[in-house]
Each structure stands twice: as structure tokens, then as C-alpha cells.
Image 1 (cartoon, protein in one colour):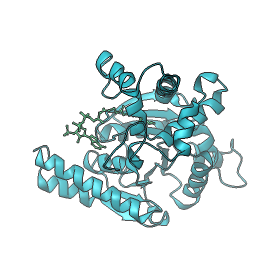
Image 2 (spheres, protein in one colour):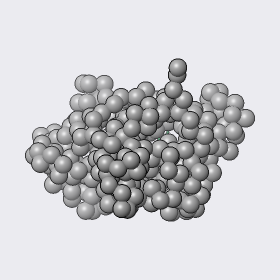
Image 3 (cartoon, helix red, strand yellow):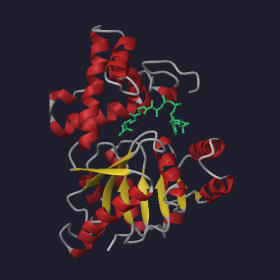
Image 4 (cartoon, helix red, strand yellow):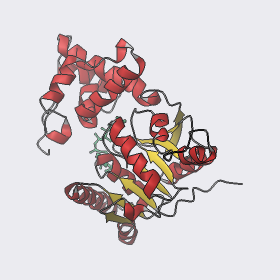
Length: 303
Ligand code: 3HC
């Protein structure tokens, strides 16, 4: 018997580039109504503008009927509080990479959302097991039935940027994640049009444990003057057929995000191969955060 994801309504927390992309593929591909929340109204409005733009492009390219685009758009509703998400069957958190912030959010999910809702994090590197421990109700032990039920519904669902384009979702099981949560999350990711690769809950999972040392080495090559920015990127675009060189990719991901992931990798493993380069730290100190801030290793006119 095939497994159903059973998600009749989804909550997405965080309307940045990842949260908006997740809302978009869920509404368009999985055809699930989405409640989108961000503490910044400005961010929500930017997110919805992006959704409109993406749908309009699909219509203009003949990939979508106008009516289908309208239906997908009508499935996304902005909400101004977590309380409004109390009936969702699943929530995906896509806020910035900060363990304390994520733990606080998941604690709140634990008290405000349905006790059987799946609680997914789009984290790029933070331990899902640590996040899951935050939802155990006060007074309950981790090993109690109540503790196991609460933390068993936490899972890592790691999308890639740009979410509408990248075909992968990395599925991460916490130590506590139940089989039902994992199975339904996989089916949901597939309904969003994605292929799924699973990873254990290690710092950075498979994707960023491999990608971040590569990006960091590229930044160190630049720092040491081994090659110019353009030659480093050209080497990978033309020599290895990567769509972007590592410096352009770092700008695209966000240099603050790259630094946060590298810090999680380094603190989680104590392995010097993950130590962030000084140049990356200085770029972030200077608020040169990459494409989103108009300047990173490259300059961008579109902010
Ligand atoms: N949102 C939605 N769609 C986008 C987009 C965005 N931000 N940027 C580009 N696209 C779409 C375009 O609209 C276009 O769609 P179409 O073919 O339907 O018209 C398609 O992508 C190709 O775009 P372009 O022709 O403008 O440009 P490129 O061919 O150069 O492709 C790219 C752009 C898809 C971003 C490509 O350069 C690429 O694949 N880069 C690598 C991206 C990557 O590695 N992402 C993973 C980052 S790591 C991560 O996310 C994990 C995290 O934990 C750090």
C-alpha cells in the first residue's frame, strides 16, 4: 500500500528566498494550501511578489495555464502569527541559521500547533536531534511516551536554492524521528516535484559537509592570491561544468549563511578543515553578504 503524506494544510515559517520557494513548490506542485508567516511584513510582501513573478513566468512560457497559476497563488495565504497555523498538518521552518532561534521556534511549535503535526526544519547544517529535543513538553522526559511522541515528529527537510529549480531535497532523521514522520516527509517532498536523498544527522549533513570546505578552499585560494576571482570561478564553470564557480555560488547562497554553516561544521567536529577563512569572516563583518546585499565577491545592481 502506498504511503500518503496526508498534508492538507502546510505552514511555512520564514518568507526569505528559501521559505518563499518552499511555499511556491508546495502550492504549485503538491497543490497544498500554505500559510506563510514571517515576523517582517516587508519580507512577506517581497516573498509574495516573487511568487507572482515565478507564476507569471511559467504562464508566459506556456508551462502553466493562467487558471492553474491563479489557483496556485490562491493556495498561499500570509498569516501574521503562529496561532493562525494551529491546524496545519506540517510546518516547515526556514529562518536564519541559529540554533537558539530554531530551538525557541520549535518549542513554540510544540505548544501552539497540533500535537500530531510534522515539524520540519529547512536547516542547512544544525543538528535536527538538538532541535527535536526542544519540543519535549516541560516536565516530560525524553524517553516517556509523551516525550517520544513530541520529538518523533521533528525532521530535517533541506531544500536547495533556488527551490523552484533545484531538484533535490535532503531528508534528515533526528535520533528521535519516527518512521511515520520520515515516510510522510519523503512523500511530501516528492509531491513537491523533488527527488530525495537521505543523510544522517551529522553537522552539515552530506550536502554542506562537502560543499562548504570546497567554497572555503576557493576563498582561501583568493585570499592567498593563488588565482583571481574570475579564474577560480572559470576553472569550475568551464573545467568541471559547474553552473556557477564556488565564489559566485557563495555569493548566491549568502556569505553570512556560508559562514554560519561553516561555524556549525567547525564547532560540531573540531576539524580544522571546516575552519572558516579570515576573508569570509571579514566580508561578513563588512556586511558584504553576497547577491542579496548587492555586494559579495561580485557586485550586483539588482540588490
Ligand atoms: N528563483 C526561481 N527561479 C530561478 C531563480 C530564482 N532565484 N534563479 C534562476 N531561476 C530560474 C530561471 O527563471 C530559469 O528558469 P526557466 O528555465 O524556467 O526560464 C532557470 O532558473 C535558469 O535561469 P537563468 O537562465 O536565468 O540562469 P542560469 O542558467 O545561469 O541558471 C541557476 C541559474 C539555476 C541559479 C544556476 O546558475 C545554478 O544552478 N546554479 C547553482 C545553484 C546551486 O548550486 N544551488 C544550491 C546552493 S546550496 C544550497 O542551497 C544549500 C544551502 O544549505 C546552502
